[in-house]
Image 1 (tube, rainbow, N blue to C red):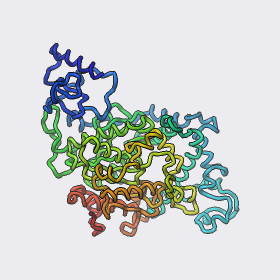
Image 2 (cartoon, one colour):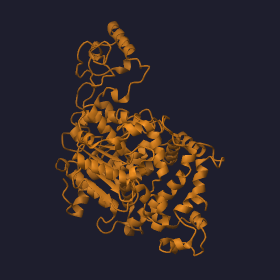
Image 3 (spheres, rainbow, N blue to C red):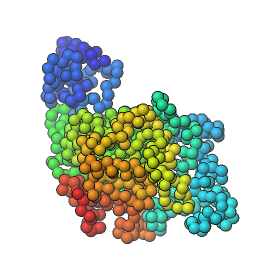
Image 4 (cartoon, rainbow, N blue to C red):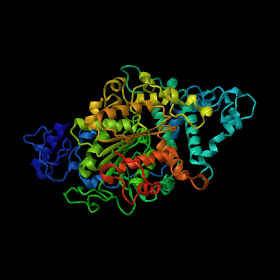
Length: 602
């Protein structure tokens, strides 16, 4: 395909249809915009390629029969990278499609034994379902020391009708004005436990895990993606909801869709559009500020460029776990929070989900995004933050960047890392957190504790990410395999935080041990939020404390564990580059001043 492209370009050159100064090679690994005949990748290459600022005109060239890999494309120009994209906000067809797939895959809802929807409702409500053994027992003696005693009549029978009609503590989820954040967080944790445990109960039967040599199993993840997309896009217009979130979490931040030059959209996402490449979150006050090095196709600085130092000269690359499963909507709140508390520009690049394309599709897309950020901002002005499954993508990205000679970012923050992508990883190698923190050992006996991630869901997602052989041997597919030496060469200073009740706590602890051996984690680079579940920062801050008022507001000056975790993250960020990553006028700086002195961070 590349030879055909070169021959066609040569013919255009000889006929005069394409000026020789503008014939560019779109496959140049170096991102050069030199003459096609001089490119080292071209079959016509006869000399080292030029780094001239000649603009690209690839639209005049034919599309190759074989698509070039996303991370091998030329970087293009800054005005394409920073231009606004398009994100569908109001639509009717996509919600119907996602609802149909969620209800009719793998079988329509009327096939009770083969429908995931029927399975979910059975296990959620029925006295013989999974939740009867997870969230309540049939014997009253089991509840003698629990809070269930105050809510369930002393009948000794299974209280499932009471539970189905009156969800007990669930009113605490929305009691923003009268219940403290600790109680509301416990209610949200319990609700997630009940829903996810019931939904994943029959997943191994309906979607058997692949064996050795078999391709990744994407059935469950496709269904989960459709379910999450249905929840995201069934809101006929997401703009009002996102406006409310912005007012509650980030009143001084603007949102804008990014162009496809920033990321490759997933075909399985609710945000899928040909002109969508992610989301920008940036300080409110006009157009998206662009870095000092940004140039248009003619080599001129963009009019929105800012000098070194102010907001816009640095960028936070946020790699969320939500976009890896479904829509960008599940990470936008985190992007708004980071932009508000740091005062920096935040990019949430789109990338293919495992339901859309397995390894290495997401890694290729993120490598492309990171390389372009390094080009326009400079690597020292790029900070990477990742959560959940996004932490696996972030580590793989930096391991690959080290292989290809790309510079390290300024720092890396990993929130509730999900790293080991092997099936059965949660209980592998004698790890105990899966047994200790699984929801089935919690329920009402320890209401508000334990994690909400069931092991069945973890295995199904891991099975869709890569083949068993890739996950067992390739550190790019499974960063849990990376050695301390590899981490030392690939990672900058790294921050890790996770909940004490996480199912994946043992993975986080193993990562911290390797980071310390590699010299990439200081004494204040690890924060453990005791009693908190997976992704506690997002759950506790975005769903709980951001909405508290009156009697539901935070008490005790930061006693709520998620707020303490956010303060620790901001303190660590303030220690990088002399505090340049937390702007003086940001909400994070104001909160730190209100809390008084925080521990010194190395």
